[in-house]
Length: 193
Image (cartoon, rainbow, N blue to C red; front, side):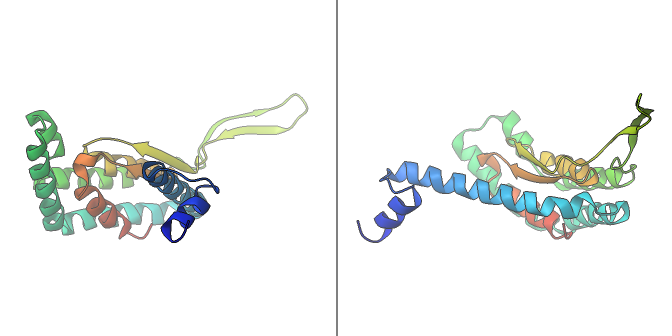
């Protein structure tokens, strides 16, 4: 086959695939690429000093508040689409991002920045029978994947402790928040991590 079909066959391991299978494969490749990029970047975050992690969390809080108009605009579009799809009032309320909720998200980021850094905390120390000093120390996991539906606060509520603990995240929000999740992610990313 010529053109896109040969690319489709080549990228799908030399076998012809249906368009749906090909789209699934492209999406999975994209997830793998994101996971690999996060894994490669995780070391940098795992050794970041507490002061820099806290500065990033504070910058994220400031970025959320500074982007309130953009966040509300994207959220209004998602809410409109949700109403058109017939989402329940409870689901629409979960989707709602207003000034008060954005300020609460920013406040929560600041609260986490005020906590102690768990990385390097010795949980237990002992001497083995052969005289070797042993200890159990908190260390970053590396990369944490999160899938969640229409709860905008999950984006910041999960980012904050993961950053504090030195972990990268890959987050996927629900389709109901297709417009404001990228806005939140851009705002959080503007803090430099």
